[in-house]
Length: 47
Image 1 (cartoon, helix red, strand yellow):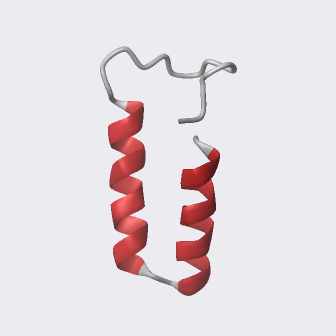
Image 2 (cartoon, rainbow, N blue to C red):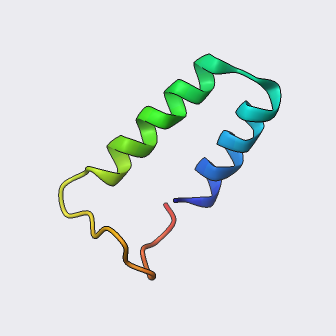
């Protein structure tokens, strides 16, 4: 998971912002399911 996304998710959970959590969750699934994604690769770049 990119560091920027992880930071935003932690902030949203801390603030209990359900709308932001849902939006970031959708971003994460979109990011993981994009064409050409290599799941489980240790050297996956953080965009």
